[in-house]
Amino acid sequence: MKNTSLALDKLLNILPDSVVVVDAEGRIRFANDSVRNLLGYDPDELVNQTLDCLIPEAYRRQHRAHFGRFRMQGKSIAMANRPLVYGLCKSGDEIPVSVSVGNIELDGEQFSIAIIRDTGELHSEITEITIQAETDPLTGLANRLGLSHAIKSAIGRARPFSLLFLDLEKFKPLNDTYGHEAGDKVLEIVARRLQDSIRSRDLAARLGGDEFVLVLDGLIDSAALKQRAAVVARNIRRPIRIGDTNNMVGVNIGSAQFPRDGKTEGELLKVADDNMYSAKQRGLDYKIAN
Image (cartoon, rainbow, N blue to C red):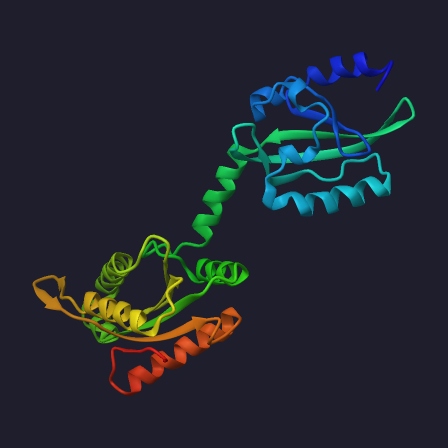
């Protein structure tokens, strides 16, 4: 960027979005004044650094491949305008941004211009929509979609975990006797008791009706699972006040462990469901496979 540099600098500095100009080697040759407010860098600090300095380490390999393919195509149109990627600030914080990139030739040299826009507000809105979509409206627990997302994420991280599949006992007669409003109250109480029975890094979900699933992070020892299942069963069996009477529901619980009992969400839920049914047939609170 020789004779055109001054004019381009002035043009890019009046833009409200952060802009960086990158050469063919992936080094930043220019950054406009807006990068200071968004990413915390003075523009001169970025010059001659690679674009990687603005990308969280977890995403750098994917970015290099994507950016390399884009440059090879030689297109002058925007590579993408993606609403939920992350930029790395000078402070080390990661912030949600959108990035649009276009190729351009200046004074016989090939450059890419990246326009970086803060999408924090959009990210918050999307996060809220996602939470609503993955939450059971009655109990506040995760719903089937939220459960699926949690299981698939844990499998993707290859981190051991266990499932406890729960089916309430005596719930249907209670619901038939006192009505659906009382039944909903029981489900809400059970949900709170399940939350009280797990750790902050675990997940409680309602599949529907009176079936629930617990995702227990890192807990795969059979003895520890039996202890946890016993605590859950004991908490659920505590009396529930409906009107002037104390009532009680029971529970049957079956377990499955990743990766031992399955490598997919479907396989794990089937094993846990089968073990729950076996416990029910045998009159047990829970069945934890050894």
